[in-house]
Amino acid sequence: MDADALTRFTTLERKLAILTGELTQTHNDIRALKLAYDLADLSRRKSKSRMVLFFGRDQFVDNSKYLFTHVAHSQSQFTPVWCSFNSALVAELKSHGFVAFDMSQDHSRTVALLLSAAVAVHCVNPNESLRLAVFDAALAGAVRLQLWHGVGHIGTKKIDLMLSDYMNLLNPSNVDQLHGASSIDVMVSPARRFDAFWRASFGVRDILRAGLPRNEVLLREPTAIDNIGAVTFQPEWRRHRGVRLLCAPTFSAAGDLPLWARPEIVSAMLSSVADRNPLLFVKPHPFDQSKIDRGLLPASGVVMLPAVRDIYPVLNQFDMLITDKSSLLSDYLLLDRPVLMLNETAQNDPNIWMAYGDAPSPGIEATHADAAEALRAALLDDRYAEARAANRKVMFETDPRTACADIAQTIAEIVNKRSPSAEAAYA
Image (cartoon, rainbow, N blue to C red; front, side):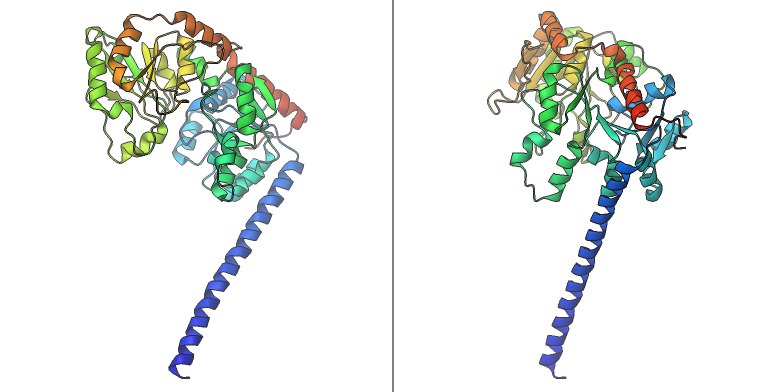
């Protein structure tokens, strides 16, 4: 064989290897699609046990946490199971007597668990909690209830299906996100004013009128169970003779510095209320954790709280909230304390400010340039008590103290319909 023939043969051999690899990958993709399709069909047909699965973030935080611990200690009509890929968290919950399942270990056993569940409770996009298409498919037969992680962006923020017209829907990641968001059957909504937003965002039809479980701990003393995964409030902070200010903004855009990392603004704010001996705490948004990991430091004089831990058991320890349009603001209104909303400018984005519908702004809104003056006015001359009350009236139509009990009752009713016989729950 001459050199030219050998070169042609080698080239053809390489092309054949590439084609063989592509065909193998396509075959595997088709098998995976069929597996997911078949699992979803099986899940919809399979009888369900009296078991409710709870999903949340990677840490033990947010609305799913509080509903899970409530039902685990207050009812016996179904078995609540916390599901997570965080092996350490699963072990910790088991040590406290809870039923918890590690989804990172035996995938076959995970699929069996998901196939049997009557109800699944979420507080983020299910795509984030389930991660794998086969897990999502295996849960298709469960009634999915979405607690979400806050309210308050109505009229400003657009999420999920509201953004589909602007997304590349040939990108599988985008479609996965939208599919997860719209896989919800029941949406918890604390007031009528939010219902249209949930339907437009998630395509959900059934609305459950109830409060947000995480708000209960604002209005009572936290328990030892509440403190699992929570921020530790140091004794010296409690003894502080002065005002405790909490800065809790939403996440900052890529390339932008969050407010708490800008020394010129932080210094001016602290100086403006120096006569009140302020302690300024910062609870970064979890999405800003990556910036912290890359070395972003807070301005001098700031007490940094962990971004990924639960702030709610200690939220009532702060005398004032400084934020932008974080949904935490809506919850903080239940404490009837001053709030200050700060944004970079008033001109860059006409949708930058919170929208309150038929209620007035619950506090001072100011730009970063006016932050110091606005902080002093908000703290020392609070004139927004009536506005906060008006907001609470339209945001919370049910008693926030009974949120968990209200939701648990509906879940029990769903379980009774899906699994009328008292068959053995998953162990």
